[in-house]
Amino acid sequence: MKSGPNYRYKLVGKESHGKTSRDIFDGTLQKTQIWLNELMSELNWQGKPEKTYFALRTVLHALRDRLTVEEAVQLGAQLPMLVRGFYYEGWTLKGKPHKERHKEDFLAHIKDAFKDDVTVRPESVVRGVFRILERHTSDGEIEDVKNSMPKPLLELWPARRKIASAQST
Image 1: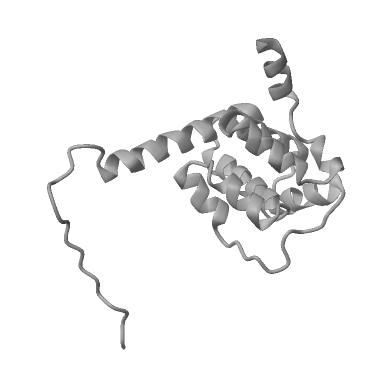
Image 2: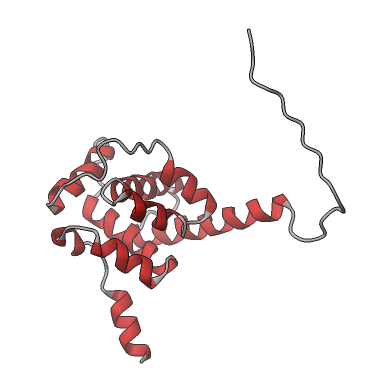
């Protein structure tokens, strides 16, 4: 059986005394853990990291598939490296963005993903993930995402950022 090419890389120059690859991966693991811990708290799912990860991934995929390709990529650029990996997992451009106009259609994707768990409230899951995105991505990016979504879906986004901005002025 023929296999692909075998590449060998040689580092040229002095060894770096800065960050190591382990530092980079430790950083993204820590950021991802913060996101998951915050979402576990938001959803009151303490001790359920697998369920929380699945919720984050499911909502990010549903959101990504409803954004223009350009906007989906811009949002992806602001995610921690590990989260960005599962955000892009399985993404195809064919038929994107989905043209759903109703909140119920969007929530149906989350409900279908958790069809075997009747304790999951899809709207709470979406709101929780959107609050995490609000906290950890730039104001401008969140506004761009909101501006590219149908109005009925906007009610799922928290109003916190506007309130916090108004209080700081």
